[in-house]
Length: 353
Length: 186
Image 1 (cartoon, rainbow over the protein chains, first blue to last red):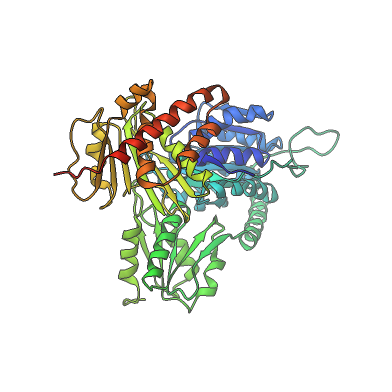
Image 2 (cartoon, rainbow over the protein chains, first blue to last red; image 1 turned 90 degrees about the vertical axis):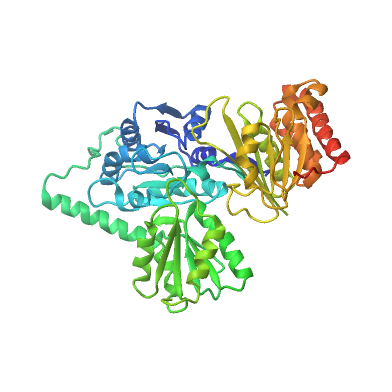
């Protein structure tokens, strides 16, 4: 099938429709507004519903309602809007409702700006809402990968009855790249016996996150914890790039990982044994990617569009066995390959490695 | 082959769509391509630009911060982006609307009266394709035929009658730079 040239934000919309999503609730914000724009046209074509809510708080609660009724449903926003949704995300996690939330990250904190950033990593992976919960987080690095990961996002949400976040950045949303869409499948959404679609003479179905008795909430928390442990063991995803014999390993996700691939190539041309780990799941963090490297590499260099957030997960994975260094740009600025190469050269074979 | 092309001008000059056309043609030729617009706090009538990367290998960063070729359609764009061109790179200046000269001595500069040539062809709106034709001739980044094929695929059927005019615009720009040599500043 022929390739088409598509914007990242549009690809999220098309990927969602092809994954069987038929409901979108959201409120516009740069740099992701092309996504609701695309779905406003596309969803009615497939018998779905696009609704612009009065606020992000309303949007996430509409998602709660649609998910509770058994729909494949999605919302999207950027930084400030995702912050407004945190209460709802906590409720969705507590009620174990499947849904997909897209964050095309912009510069923060506060109103910040609309330029690309990765500084919502803590919020995405630690949970910006209250309570003991986890959200699965996927981080695509190309427009093609967006199409592929949207299907995975909805499937994981269903498999674990859990919110899934897709975390991109302004560049990924705005850029156009060729994509192979493939044949449109007839997606079979897994049965949802728990959905609040009417009692039909059977058991009462109540979707709620309220457990007023401490013993009961503890049991619910422990049940969630078992689910999160299962996800952590089964769903770690990452890409490895030129790790053969690498002494210094770069770690980066999303757009920054693309830049780091160019860094790896340049370093290898100059005879420096440098490789890259690109996490695709930010939670669960791909700790398994690091284990085979222990004792075989000198050090790690984490590159982010923030002042250092994912670097904490790399330090947890490496657990003191090797030095973990950091290089970042922030405020909407992008790391430049030449600068990262300089950073690599400073560290490569140097003291403390 | 690696070309990072920055196209800049006023909103409404077709800067973004010229870039998309170029990216589409690169895709049809089986190359790796990316297109990224400026999406800052822009306003209608303000400046707009887009970066197009066309390469034989996967593209690392789609952001064109150091263009190998720069097309400027208006004066603020020349003033803003001239410095960013890589040494030895190419600069195409729309001399219909830009009354100053480039200052760099280490790049190739061509002055193309794109608006006037487009008006001679009968439609000022094809100025972008006049200058794009010059870029294709000088860089060989994609073929003129691939651009025409892209128009056929991108434009709705009722607009296909505009394709011959756009083809002539591309050929006009290409012919102009075939006849002339680069002007070096200074």
